[in-house]
Amino acid sequence: MFDTSQSYADRGTAQWDFAELNIVEAVSTSQFGQVAIVQAEAIVDWLDPRPAPDNTPGPRAHVAVRDECPACDTRLAGVRNSEAPLTTRLLPPGRPTKGLLCIYSWTTRGVTSPLVRKLHLGMAPACRLAASAGALSLSHGDRLISSCGIGSTTAVLPLS
Image 1 (cartoon, rainbow, N blue to C red):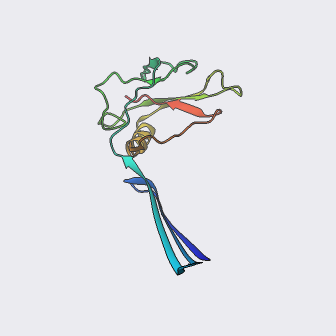
Image 2 (spheres, helix red, strand yellow; image 1 turned 90 degrees about the vertical axis):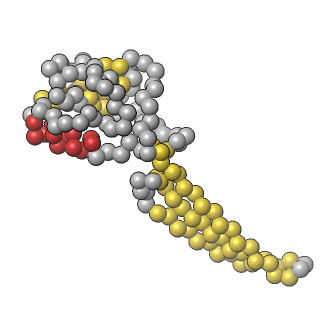
Image 3 (cartoon, helix red, strand yellow; image 1 turned 60 degrees about the vertical axis):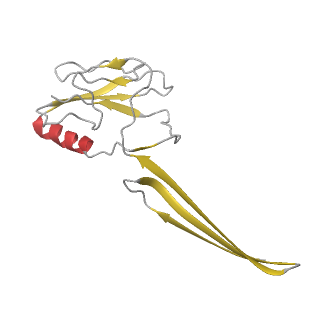
């Protein structure tokens, strides 16, 4: 039996996260003579361009630029915006005039997430962070399994 195998992969795009083509060719000898077998297999993880709804159960925090950062983010499922719901973008439209960056880090046991740094941002850094956040794709894979490991850092960034 003679086998050859070829694989082709492509980088992720706005439409897919992963794409691969595998081709296997085999020639086998049987009682009927030589038989050629070709198998082609394509795998594509398509991305859904619509933002995934924030439906994680649990309390939400509202942090305004004029507020202080919460001392920890333990037991919070996320943050909430007091403006109209953001259904198609990460941030409301407009240029921010200032911001507050609250950075949290898990303890070694992952039990609490204490505040480790607080930064008051002027207009220029707030605009740079808003531009970076606005450039993020909200596309996601449906039914894909993902996880965040213990020991991660989280941040809350209210903008005004």
